[in-house]
Length: 83
Image (cartoon, one colour):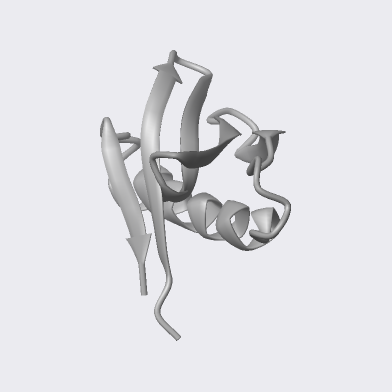
């Protein structure tokens, strides 16, 4: 099964980055990455109870890990997890 998670950057400073994440721009939660501790927090879950927020959160975290580790802490305005 293919999966797609859209990520839109909301905020970034030296310590944290916050993205909205979800299947599309109408259904989105919020994820925060602390760049220092490398820990993720779900600030807001997806608003639709029928959509598994953890599924989308986990894939958003995977994509942000790639940005942090492999892409030299470059966090684009818009990105996606696709598989």
